[in-house]
Image (tube, rainbow, N blue to C red):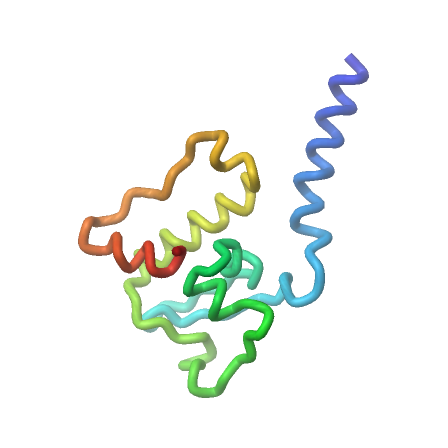
Length: 123
């Protein structure tokens, strides 16, 4: 009983540490302007998929440029609904960590017309 409770506690601590002990700029909140809709997330959410458009744009060498900012957020000329789906997927991926594949979770359904845009952001 005690060993089981300790294992659960250690798992919970490990899970929470992912969000507390993220070094440096990973906790930086990035304000986004997605075709006029304001969104915000932490930088580490956007950089999870190594080599992706988002990881490249917001990676370690990222420096906010004045021309990227429109109405207080980094501008993307994309569907807010599609980008919201991307953010939800990235947040889920961050929560599940390495367990994501073992839970057999795949990318969320997106309209066929938006699949290539979704993939471009994450691949």
